[in-house]
Amino acid sequence: MSLKSTIYDEGGDVMERQGLLFALLATFLWGMAPVVEKLGLVRISSLAGITIRSVSIALILVVVAILTSVGKEIVRADAKTLILIIGSGIIAGLLGMWSYFEAMKRWEASRVVPIVGAYPLLAFIFSLIFLGEQLTMQKAIGVILVVGGIMLLG
Image 1 (cartoon, rainbow, N blue to C red):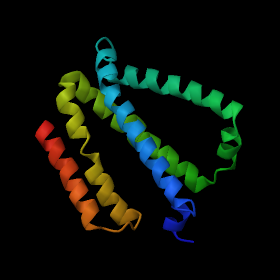
Image 2: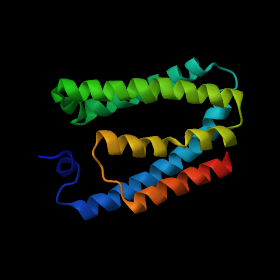
Image 3: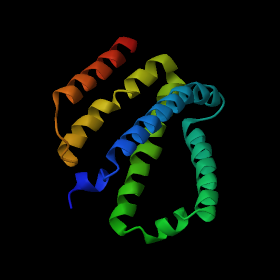
């Protein structure tokens, strides 16, 4: 079974619509977050901000795990999955957020966010290399437009 068939099952159309909906929701929420973060970081360090953010999220997720089947799913996760998810948390949730919060404390949010927003370019390149995703003209043009827009805002 290929990685692609693992990710895309027979309900592809429904999954694509749901994927778009969640992507738009994430865009809205992440678009709102920098304003809240900038205001929240005024009187505390970046590391304190990440700690407060992470602990509050962890507490909520512990409750979710207890009340749903997620707890059982976590216990059943294999070592590779755990290493990948923990690594992602360290890379993005700790190091990436710390870098981002440090930038937000030192610079205007309207300048930080577009620069940080260049991550789709890296995600695109890494997806080609590590996930074997296909390079299409549509994807390439999309990335160019996103990065061009980021450069105009920055």
